[in-house]
Image (cartoon, rainbow, N blue to C red):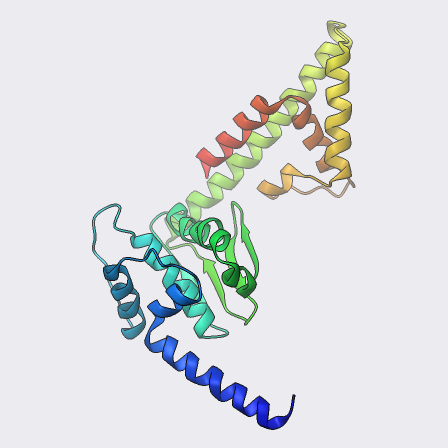
Length: 243
């Protein structure tokens, strides 16, 4: 590209950037396809850009978290390199904003998917990273919240270990004590471990339990898989409740 064309392109990008910074609601509608935004929601988005401090007081169902998520996304797109921290009384409230971006906005907007480089949601980390260097990070609001998160993480680890031990002891009892060697049980155990190892699935990493022994996490995950969907669903439900 010639220098003249490059300068012209930069001037054009600069003009559109300036326009959308003054009219961020138009970027949400035109670029991200959020044509469902109500007029009052568009006005609130503009106010969040115009003022350094904005407080929204509204009843349930008015879309406070929705507006916060949209503003975070628009800021990251329009201001490359910006770092946004989200804090709330409970960590789950902050994580919900990240979930809205990933599960709701990204699935319905190709342009937003092209803007985002990486994202992560786990018990300890929740963040979204954009290709232009911007990022959105969930942080802990208070010491009490940090203590609660630490306890939740430790309980999650203990729950995961206990569920795995329960599965191992059940198989030992079936194979060596009661002598119930049903072929269905053996096949489910073999295929569960094979699939977990082959696809490198390690549920223990979800609660930050890592072993120096290769494939141990995948083998233990395979044991969980072999217990069936109800067993796995029960485990994941308990982890979600703790978090």
